[in-house]
Length: 161
View 1 (cartoon, one colour):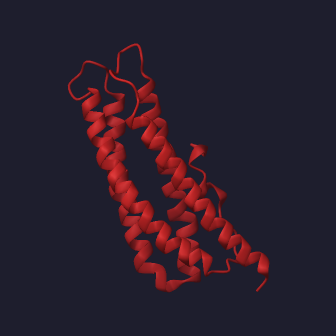
View 2: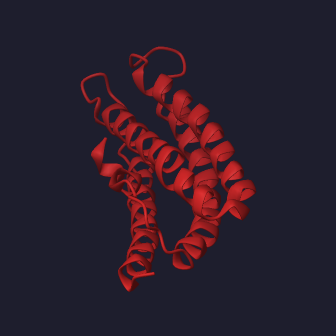
């Protein structure tokens, strides 16, 4: 196999790590957004929605692109990838809750900053565990794989949402 294929796998592993770093930075920014969320200042809501969309695009790209490709090339990874896809489902339900809270009009029950903050705190903890596991397992597989197929770039770019 061409050395180019191995170089591409290592580059993809690095891109995965960088995408996760960007998502970590974005959620940290959300969690440190100024208080309170005022009716005339929907910045937090807009940032919450943008983050939710970015993370959703990232996970859909992984599920439909990178993970599918890895299972074809490394069938032994199927149980690991199934766990990661399951995590994506759990994270998606939390993102739905964050979206719901972010879209509530200010002053309505549950629209307070504390409700969003609690969801973001839980999401951050789950994401950190998920990202570490994924980086450890998938990066190792990418570093040891010579992909010959096309790897979809959107998998790694959460800023495309």
